[in-house]
Image 1 (cartoon, rainbow, N blue to C red):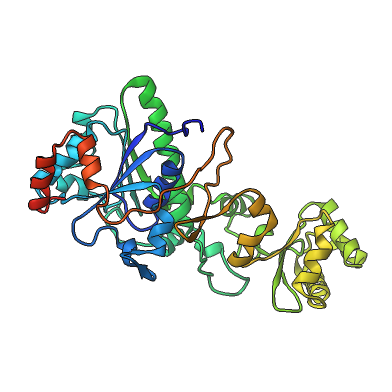
Image 2 (cartoon, one colour; image 1 turned 45 degrees about the horizontal axis):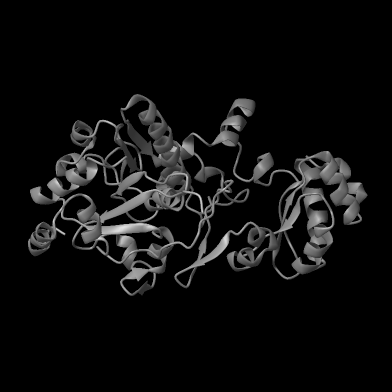
Amino acid sequence: MNPKPLSGIRVLDLTRLLPGPMATLHLADMGADITKIEDTAAGDYARSLWSPVDDSSRFFRMLNRNKRALKLDLKRPTGVEVFFRLARDADVVVESFRPGVVDKLGIGYEKVAAINPRIVYCSISGYGQTGPYAHRAGHDINYVGYAGVLDQIGQAGGPPAIPNYQIADLLGGALVPLVGILVSLIDARKSGRGRYVDVSMTDGVFAHAIFPLLGLLLQGRTPPRGADVLTGGVPCYGVYPTADERYLAVGALEEKFWSTLCDTVGRPDLKPHRLARGENGEFARRELSAVFRAHTLAHWTKVFAEVDCCVTPVLTIEESRQDPQLRARGMAIEVDGLPQFAPPFQLSDFELGTPRPAPQPGADSETVLREAGYTIDEIAALRAQAII
């Protein structure tokens, strides 16, 4: 097997919960050596969330495969010394504390860059390191709320709908950091100097709110919730219930797709109403809804499997894991007896291989420190002092 794309890249991961660990999971799967550094007390809170199993919850295990674990007390000078020794040979540091915490601990970017100028140091936070909200607490719902995105999710006339998909955490807090980290790594290879990457999850969502901004530009105001072209405001794009209280996703935006859809369900009279609003739009949605209500999801799935017009079933995650397309792409895998997702990157000459299970707390402390040059006696002394 060829070396993985990020083989040889060393990452010190100080992150917890979802955003940072998801970012470093992608790096780990691509071959980077991720050392997950946790405090000597609770460690990553994800270990105890949602059904703990053998000290590590399913949530934690999903996000931390292919990583190594080191327990380290960074509130004590000796622990900071250990961190610096590891940082001398590292390529990346990723942290997700509130702004200012790493500086108080004495392990901020300036301190690390002084001993390793090529370090790429990424800080992930809700609102970024600057601005009036920088030190505020928050969660995904708060970040998408500030970014103008939560306002757009939901049905017309109803309240904002809370998605069970953490947009800010996963887009703003996982994928955006990856871009910043990889860009900075490439630049460091050329220049010999790393960069500080300041990631705001709110910024990450706001920068991708394309259609709310487009609505503002075209109409002079943000479209009302559920009234825009891509939020259910027109008949050709939306969700429709079936006889068994399941749903179809209709994405027949283009005229050719809408025309095919209307012919397939025997309602060619609806063709003029593809982008209709007002009474005509309500009429078309009502009529199409009645058609779909006449049969089950399985019936319509079979019908539209043979028709090219962007009408598909709304699946549960259980069904998605068995879907032939996702299985053909190898996306549904199992690691350590736990169903998981494969990396969403199809690269030539790359195989995920057999992933290592998520590590137990501090499981690799001795190995990591030996690689950094510590002797067995020095490691024993650190353990006796509860530094590791």
